[in-house]
Length: 455
Image 1 (cartoon, rainbow, N blue to C red):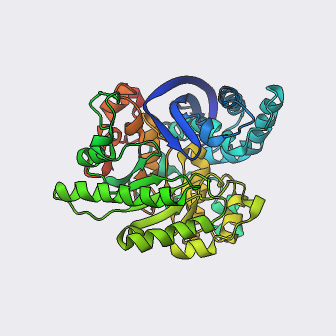
Image 2 (tube, rainbow, N blue to C red; image 1 turned 90 degrees about the vertical axis):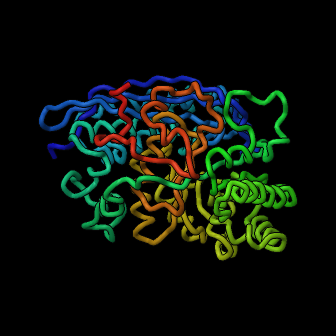
Image 3 (spheres, rainbow, N blue to C red; image 1 turned 90 degrees about the horizontal axis):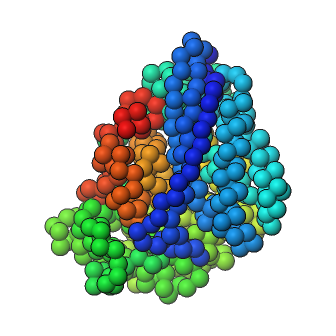
C-alpha cells in the first residue's frame, strides 16, 4: 500500500532518570530508570518522509529479574538489544505496515537476544519479556512515524484501508475479515480514572513521613496524594509471603483513602487492584488472602477490582489452576504475557484477563486487544512508572481501548518535577492527575500525539 513505510534511519539514545523516592515491588527496590529514546525516519510509497518517536524505560528489574546476572550487566544487555534491533529495522529494506514490520522481525529479535546473551557471557539468557521492552521504543517510533507520514492519528491506521493483512493473518482463521481498528475506540476518551501505586516502602499517613523525606513540593504519603489528586483507584503492592502484613496493608490503604475522600467531601467509593509481582508460591495464598480481607472488611473485599500476576511468570513450570481464585476476583496475567502462546495457555489455566503494557511493544499490545475484545476477556493498561512521552503513549493507548478501569499512571510519584519539563509543558493533564483522573486533550492529531516537533 502507498501508506506503508520503509524505515530509513533509526537513532537510539539512553539517559538515566533518578527517582525522588525508592519504589519497592515484589522483592525489588528500584531507585531510578534508564530511558531508551528513539527517533525513526520513514518514507511512504509516495516518497514522503516523516520522523517518529518512542520512549520506554529499560526496567531490567522487572523484565529480567535474574539473581544470576548483576543489574548493571542486565541493563547493558538490554541497551545492546535495543541498538541491534534498531539496526535490523533500519535495514528492513522494503515498505510495510508497522505491525507487519514487528511481526516479521519478532523472530530476529529473539535471535538478537541469543547473540547478545552469548557475546556478553550472561549466566542466564535474556528472556523474551526483556527483549520486548528493549525493542518497544523502536516499535513505537515506527507507529508514530506511520501516522505522521500519512497525516493521520496512528490509531486510525489499523483498518482495512491502510493494512494489507486482516487479523486472520496474525491470529488465525477465525479473525478473517476483521481488523485491529474494529476493536478500538474511534476517538480518545477525554479523561481516564488513574490507578495510584502504593509501593511496599510508601508511607500511608502524613505523620509517618520522616524528616529526611524529599521537600520538593510533592506529597510523600498516600494521605497527601489523595488530598492533592483526588485519587480513588489505589494499586497495592503486596509481599506475597506474609499474609497478615498483606491483609493489614490492604485494609490500611483503603482506610486512609476513604478517610481523606470523606474529609474532602468526596464520594468514598474505591476501586482497588492488588499485586504481589509473582511472589506467591501458589494461587492458594491469594485465595486465603481474599477470604481474610472479606472476613475483616467486606466493603474493601467488594472494592478489589482485580488481582495481578500472583505466581511466577513461567506458566508451564507448575501450570497452576487459577479457576478457584478467578471465581473470587478477576486475575490478570502480566509478566507471563509475551506471546500468543502465553495468552492461550493462560486462558486454558483459568486466568481471567490480561494486563497490557506499551513497553511490551505497541504492535503486540494491539493484537492482544483484538484477542481480548473478541473473546470478552477483561484487560487493563499498566505502566512501568512511566513519565514523559512514554506516559503519553501509555495513556493514549488506554484512551483508545476499553480497559477494565482507566489506566495506571504513577510516574509523577517517583520522578522529580525537573524530569521531562518540555513534555510537562505540552501535556500537563497527563503528567499531573486531578480528581483521580488524567486528561487526554493535549494529545496531538497526528501520529501517537506526542507533539515532539513543538519542543
